[in-house]
Image (cartoon, rainbow, N blue to C red; front, side, top):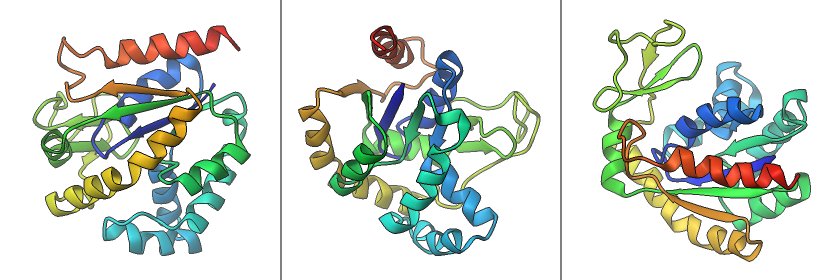
Length: 218
């Protein structure tokens, strides 16, 4: 199953993908993680990407596409993946159509005020990548991951100014991309304003209904 996840920063794509990947035995491939790994390793593409990411801007296609192709060719992605952070434009969507055949697009809708609350308190594990929130989903021990006991940290680009800029950039670009995927009948929209920790949240259940239906037809 080759699935694209769309949604503004803070919509929960990474959180839901971390739970869905084990259920369907496919990797969660985040272009943000791919880029940060390149930055960590100080590759040429990584250093170029860092300039854009530090300002909250999108990384140019020519940088991210080469890194993404490399990741998609790895063995664990042969049977499918949950692709997070790509495409962001019609041009990128067309390139992706040439690389892989997308089976579904899950679009997570969220309001700006909810994004600010979530990302302002977001904590990410340096070890396993699990996501917590110091306001809504705090770890059992402050600063320590519940799963692997590595340290938690806040991303440098999770400042209010950068969050707002990233959200506005996303909203400006998502409409044509949404129309593109509506034409293929692959688009599924989910309301992700309710936090996963809230008993009223049904986003994960709805994702599984969609993916189970797709899996049954493969």
